[in-house]
View 1 (cartoon, rainbow, N blue to C red):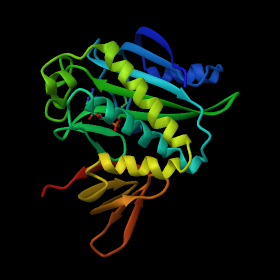
View 2: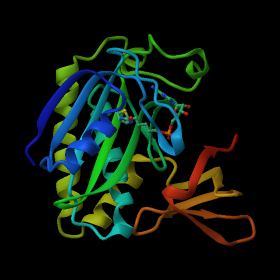
View 3: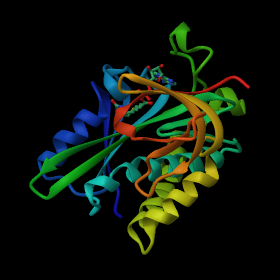
View 4: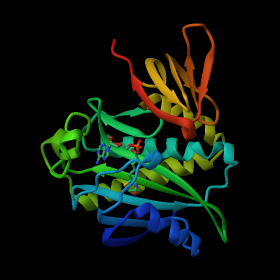
Length: 248
Ligand code: BT5
């Protein structure tokens, strides 16, 4: 994949810009990076704090030829790529299903995949926010968020971070598109996540709260949760409001 970078000082959201560019016909591998976002977003209308130069705010356009049921694998593929990127800085990341990269139980990165129709067929814009430092975090994030600088004691070079991220995305995406790609992606994700099996969790799923023990992923990336009554709940990324580990 060829990456082409478009830098901006400030955007409302790099995902919004990349979605516009996809609709206007931009190629796969087009990337949007901003020094700050004024309306960075997470899932379900939540906010992604994006103070100037404190994080990598990045979106990439992909045109994956995947059946729509398998689109959630794009989020998992990106989680693998970001996890590998963060590990390059000497950290030990965990992936909380479906889109949080954690270091020491604190969130260092969030991923938001959004789809749109374009003249070239369906596009997925994958937005990645990686915290470089934690200077601009609001107080309510102090206990739940972290950054590469806070964890390693030194500020990563932004260009080096982007280069490692590109290589990791290219590797994970090629693997997903190749022979047996869905299974390999699920396997790779499971190897990097303590949440895939045996974790006691509580999940807000639509109007329901489900408690149980995680029991691996379905072929399309949905999470299996084994309930106390022996039933298995299949949780789809689009429906889940919040997933948290239960205290041991
Ligand atoms: C996510 O949503 O984690 C997806 C975040 C994706 C952000 C990127 S940045 C580039 C691109 N452009 C965008 O507009 N978005 C993408 P969610 O799982 O809904 O988590 C949101 C929650 O994470 C918030 O409600 C806060 O609790 C927490 N949060 C907000 N900002 C954070 C930060 N900088 N670091 C850690 N946690 C944060």
